[in-house]
Length: 84
Image (cartoon, rainbow, N blue to C red; front, top):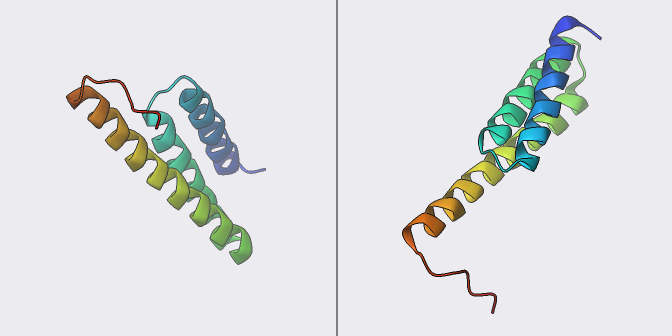
């Protein structure tokens, strides 16, 4: 694996770790790592891998936005979530 591949993989592992600690920037690390993999895959002609990595980056970005919106709602509404 190339140095850039190691960097992308390290960013993905760090992102997953940070998400486990409920840190929002874990999603950002994951998006960045996936986008690096998209560039690596395209440069190597691995367009199927690039497509999958792009989808993963999009899902992580969507999850970041959803998680931040939910966190903001919790901050502005002091009532506990209604489970029903």
